[in-house]
Image 1 (cartoon, rainbow, N blue to C red):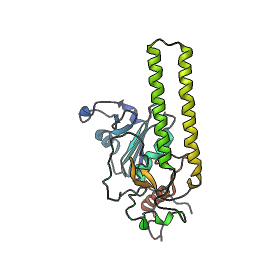
Image 2 (image 1 turned 180 degrees about the vertical axis):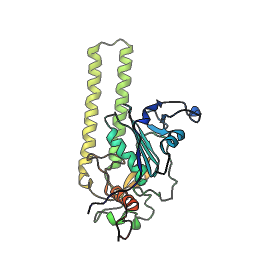
Image 3 (image 1 turned 90 degrees about the vertical axis):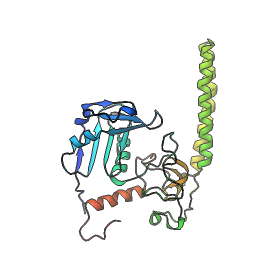
Image 4 (image 1 turned 120 degrees about the horizontal axis):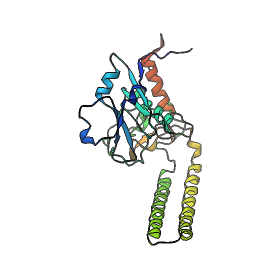
Length: 284
């Protein structure tokens, strides 16, 4: 049976060309014409894009369910509000993945599952409180975890997947790369010849390769868990205390560019909400 999803989605890419700007936070609330703004969330590596309210009102003259707003820019960026709008650039190499990730937020209320970025969301979720989002948990009651029906048989909760070993090795690799940059900078300041600089690069590059191999070896030890549903620590900006359903998902990163099974169910439930099948028992 083919099920049609009936909802109002406004795709507004052409108007988004009106203006793209980056402004100091203090100036953001000044009156202005149609535009989108890039905002750094704590770190310049993280881009959040927000449409102005005046922009939204101009695009939404009537009722709507969701605003999906792709716009032309080669910058990496995206932003969304749950059950409201989704904004992404379209000319970056990762734009397709970013768009689907942001759509997961706006359409199904999914939480971010990544946790290693340096962003201003630290302690976003209060300790001892179960998050509302369907794809993360504080694991306060493992016997009644919110995706209990989807758990892989015999899986342990929480689910060990080599996280501590990998993070220790990743930290060593970051230090090695920082030391490389510093050593090369100092060598150049001293007027060291190009041949010697290349020797310095080669030394650090070999150490980097060794650490990368070690990281991959740890991941291989747990690769049998890649399609399992459990409770994997590290989610929603927190390395400790929050758990995600699977190792890989578009809400963190996915080699297959897929949502995990729990996120797929959450999306299906929203489709059921907007376009219920006659005679069905409601949300799955």
